[in-house]
Image (cartoon, rainbow, N blue to C red; front, side):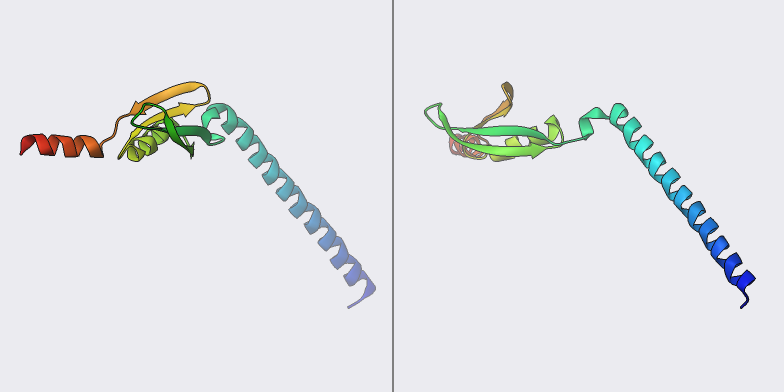
Length: 116
């Protein structure tokens, strides 16, 4: 391989490297712009919301708390409703009461006993 051939090979390698770098930079910029636009289209999907499910005792006072992280309010309500097996559950997001779920298991037993 002559001097001219190795110089031509280095020159082609530099050109190829610049083209690849430019393509990578362009792709990264497109991804950045897509993410920026997506943030404005669906702002509620960027993070999970914090909810608290309070277990309400028979005396009407808080007997416990379960912290929940949910994608949206519907998911939080579903989880809280499933927790209301033996006691009432109040679902809160910050200072806002979202819902209250009465116990399902005790209600089922009471209705079964009344029928027989």
